[in-house]
Image (cartoon, rainbow, N blue to C red):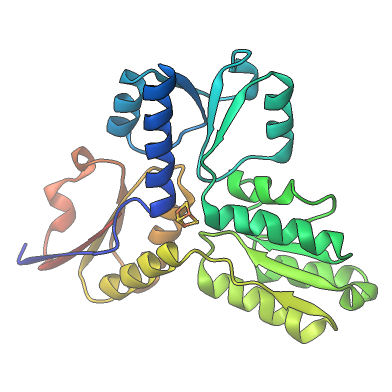
Length: 264
Ligand code: F3S
């Protein structure tokens, strides 16, 4: 391989690093705590946190009464916070400030009588969390779903609509979706809530993918960020490999390649 181009923006974002730091501090201070869901998609960091006494739990029902619980950077559904309160748990809310901002936006929009529209993956924990801050949210995974909603009832065009995006949404998908709403509806407010860190990482990945023979994307298979990076790279590069760790790389994959790209 003649050259490897590594994305400068590769790696964990500020929101995830902040959550890990809060978990670390809490575990040290309290001599242990629970982390609700996976706080970071990195086995080594999780092992370090566990060594400090931070245990991972997958549901609220596994939380012990009175235990201190870290809420991960994606945020959680409102019901989860309510249930933790009922259990007498102490919440350390490590929801990324960008996500908190969207939760506030959607809740405020609904109080003003507006229809909240979230552009993102309906089953992603962040989106489910955002949706729980409203009573009647609409979640669309892209322009086709937006068009279907508009076609359902002509009155939908007159509904005052507030549009937000999942923080890791692919920009093109968000823009195509809000442009349809802007064109068809009479009263639309758009909040571009795509996270800057994500946008930067996606733009750089696209740029590198367009200039290399093979592109490697490192990240957890369950991560929306990883999935979106792979999709973006596939649009610019025919050979894209998504892996979780270096063991998955095989020399065969690089046959005939002179320049490789790497993002994470
Ligand atoms: Fe990370 Fe927060 Fe952005 S968790 S991807 S910095 S929204």
